[in-house]
Length: 421
Image (cartoon, rainbow, N blue to C red; front, side, top):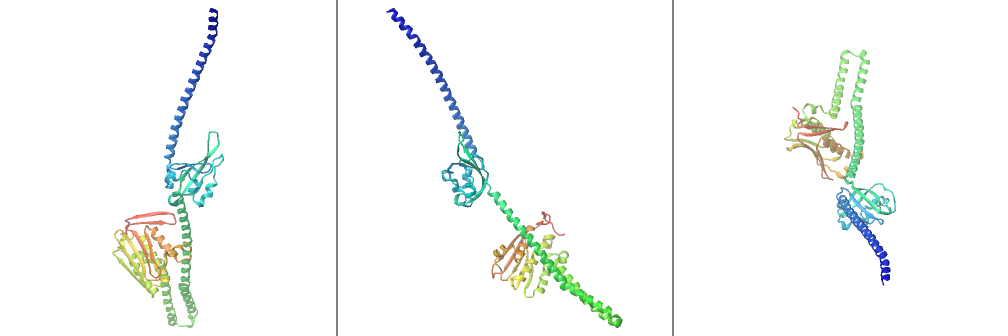
């Protein structure tokens, strides 16, 4: 019995040792698993915090952010993109991105598909459409989106609103086009003016001087055959012709720039201009009326602009209006000065004429010239006209504050309360 007991004790000892060893091993494994669980929890917590920070950062971006899967279905859109589109998240997420691209620019966007593409794409400028099919210019910078195993699972893109920039660029292009058109019109107007002056010099002064030259030469050749008294009478006949030449020079000079404008001012010059126009175009009655306007309230440069505007308006009315009356008004309206030229002629469709201003030969050129003069001097230009309704050209300038643009240098000259003393 004792022998059997001893044998049993000898057999149990290794088993107990093995069980204790396994228990210690299991306890170490359990501790290791527990540590891994804690580590995984910490990583998941940090990942959650990181995602929250990323989400918060993306939501606060001043640019749009969109994420789409391989089928180009939107899986995420930040607040700024939703604001740009003017749509709630439920009407964006789950839809194809192409649903929000203007039809004329689908090719530009679809050309940047990122399915299984492993490289960064270029930027694309295109139009997006949002609430009510309202469109806006944007710039998209799509890039591939990879998972942990470097497999492409979709794409993301930063969408930048460049609507204001595009509008400014388009406005600049329109302005450049307008400036080119105006430059062409200026050159054409210069050639017309040179042609007119050349014609007047040739037909008026040139012919008069030629007649005087012929008359003098003829009398000189006949001096020996005539008495002194007869020669004197013949030469005296030259004086009226010389006076005609002087009057013609004065007329051309006054047409180019009236000396009255510098001598007695714009108001008296406009009054004189109406009288001269009545002589030149008897079929039209030209009248001038000033209403509480003082000469000293008009700056020297503005006087020139006002005269040129009236000159152009009267020229247009004489050629095209078939009017019986042309009335010129100046008025002091307290804070602004008004110049108005009104006729009772056939009028015209201003929208059609204004659309032709790109053609130097069009009669709309005069309107462009007047508008440029008014706006370059800090004023506001308006034309009221319709077929068979006559025409009213209205120019308004802030009183005591006129801006003049020097087109030769691009400089702007602002004059405040500058008055003739």
